[in-house]
Figure (spheres, helix red, strand yellow):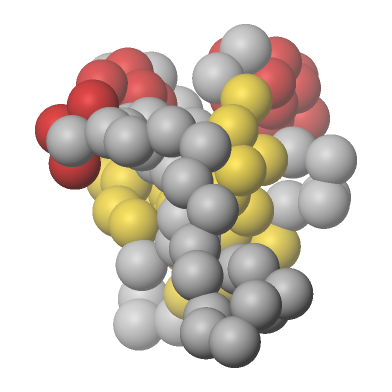
Length: 104
């Protein structure tokens, strides 16, 4: 915004059509773990898999709790963020440790 003159003006550096604009990661990625009690090794594999799909969205992992209706939600480390692109969500959902993925 240029306010050096009597009226406000915008200084435009680049014009783009909406379909040409880069897609930004947003929201939180929720991952429901399929195994009731995943092993530490399984979780290491999932973590490595997610690190290969870096992005800007934090990850929340959903685990089955002690009771049938209980669920435990754990926010992953701030260092572990993934992309929210539909193709990445589909890849995560195909992982053997994952039962469900959604974005909020």
